[in-house]
Image (cartoon, rainbow, N blue to C red; front, side):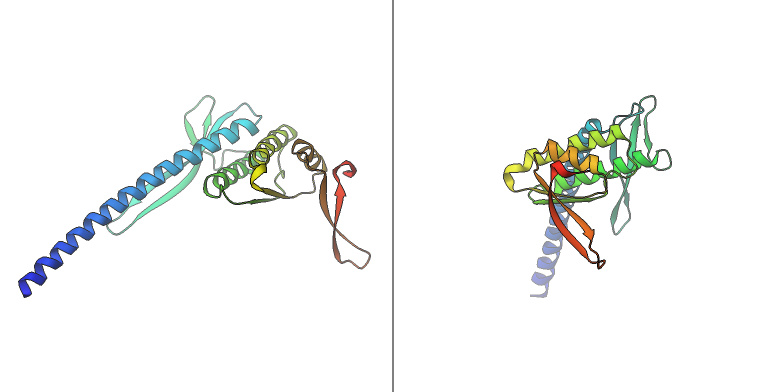
Length: 199
């Protein structure tokens, strides 16, 4: 009886190891596929929004570190420069490029992981962006809104940039927006306004 238990335990351990190996391979394959999907979205959004001539594309690179007990991923954002190979963006970009890269990555992650999520919220997304990149970013947001319009998608933008809000509203055929302000008693109030009154 003891021998049967020993054989059964060894067999169970071998099976568990096989299942662990299969699951690990499946997770690595899923990670690889998801990174390809995210990077494709990042490239598409970057190409559509960035109006500079120095950076062709950006992407997320995952460096894998494996120890005897665990595996970890270290992610970094790299850019494909017109004249050079891929380089880390950290320490090599303007404030506007950093902001645009962060927005592009957020949009790609939201598109990839939250495709059925009905809300995307952005707070002051045009900070540090020049006019050309604001226009490109507006076009990318408009495309997302139009693609998801039938699914009840909502885009929430918090911004002081009236020109950006007006252009986005016109591109997405929005008729009204909400403005938060203080009343005479310094209490916050929110009111609906027609887009035609922006300014």
